[in-house]
Length: 422
Image (cartoon, rainbow, N blue to C red; front, side, top):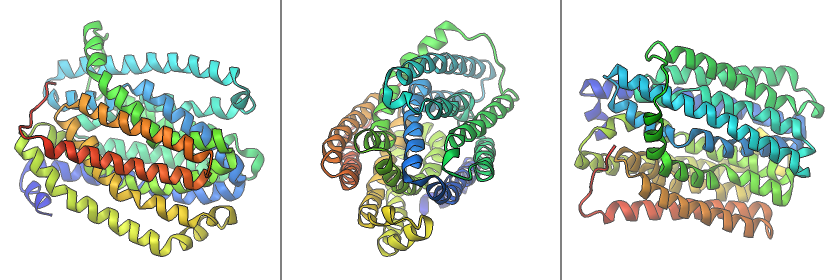
């Protein structure tokens, strides 16, 4: 708590606190709205069709990493450093938006070929095609820019707007199993509206100019290691539903996906802290950065531990209340085991999401995430084929633990910490 007290004593701290509140508002919407929508979809669509929808969403989440191309960290860091230089800020903004839209088109072509080539996807091509609207909406949404200029309130309002729109549409128009294709449609509509509005608002702070080829090249070169890191991160953050669905089927994907949504919501509590502190931490000296990380660690452990204790005591009641589905509550033990990974996740996020990006150590971050991502995929594929639900849960817990160990071993082994170039 001492770090929070010291931060509040200056203007930068007050801005950070305001950004944290905005980001916390986002996470509240990210947690509460899905917890309202999730039981409704499971009960209305059944675990099999719900699993299909999750599989398509998971596929598109993996694809978005190719569109995002690491700009979520590299561009945020650049904007935070250049926030008083309007000309260079406009150059960075225009270059990033141009690259992301070009990549969105290229990825869409590849995605269409995959859907039409493989019978597993072609059978439900509408669900997969409609899900891609989320990728386009996210490409338009310059959250990295608002985070860089520390105007997180715009991200909060528009993010919540997107979720309210598609949540309302789903409740109104998805009334039976046959309406399952409306879920990706309305989800995409929500993200496209929020993405378009946020892009228009961003033009109040920056000018859209002809992108410089040199700037585009610099940004892509700088972001390559983050891009590879984000691919690796998707291998354990977003690919598990996809792996389960492809190996064990849509119904099992629906059961695990229900657990994972709650687990990811718990991890989401840490994101506002990381995102709010990131711009401030990026401009501090190395001693201050390391001291701040050490002070934040006990707070993260405490938050995660409270969540885990609640799940261990009330896990079955929570699943019964949310889903009232015997197929889901039968795996209460697996759900409890999965949620224990929250402690490991919070600790590795402190290093991988906050410290290493703040110092520009993108290659080191990439290496750690690659190890974790490959480890997760190999272990998941092996265990899911033998023991579907428990197999994927064990893979997730061990992956989060491995990442936490690798991250903190690296942090403590740095005898002479160095700041990396922008």
